[in-house]
Image (tube, rainbow, N blue to C red; front, side, top):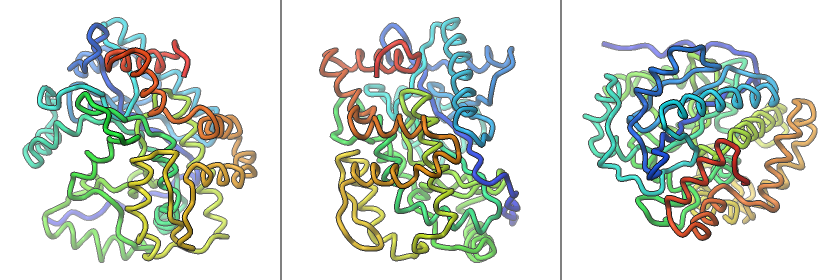
Length: 378
């Protein structure tokens, strides 16, 4: 049976919403804890200041905010959500933390959450489903129209490595340092419908020339079946950025959303050269550099083919976006990102320092738990 693509619902332009996949951790041995069902049951009994739902395995949950126009309001809701989760976790003796990967969990020990969609995905993808116990931040940006959404989706390709590097928090996997700042994305790339969206700038072309044909093949049934780095979400009237690791703090998560919001505001002025298919010639290379080296990576500018320091490119972009940050009320978010890039480093760097100081992966998870609770310096 043919399933039509949902109409793209116009939303308030440049509103932003955040989804965070969080780790559930045993506070004794700091391994993952299959506690999602208990956590969700407890949270159902009280009013939750956002939305919370299960994810692929029992050792993770996903929280999401309402749409917000201002960074301060988004951060306030994330802090409220964080405090609610921490209190619930304390009652269940379960800790929560960010980070794109758990550094030493064994994928084969994970349990698929008992939900029909997750069972179906497990049957389809086999062991990849359990290996998908990785944790990301998704950011939604409201779009006035579907065509505007597709324009932003492709115009952002040049800045995608910024978000990988700024959010990178998954240097360890299966007990070893991967030498990647973001090892999480390597797990995402294993899925056949990951990567980049097709270069189409008209929603009518996307709907009829691409989605309808893909749906007829039986490969996809909805936009949920695409694991693209950025994808349209017609039911929300947004585009969804999906490349970020879950940061260790909700403050960093809110700052990343504000950075994306300001970038979109700038891109909608259309003062930059429009996106083209040729921009994607260097896309995979730039994405790899950001995953492997983080802020120390090197980019190839898709329009000029010039080599750029990723760190310097982010700093220059932050400076250029200052008028937009001022108009949107995001100066505090930009200050946090500037400090991270110029001096503190990414959360991946923080985790490596903790590993060296604590002498093991358990101490690294303990530091991540304390960072999420805002009980430790980061």
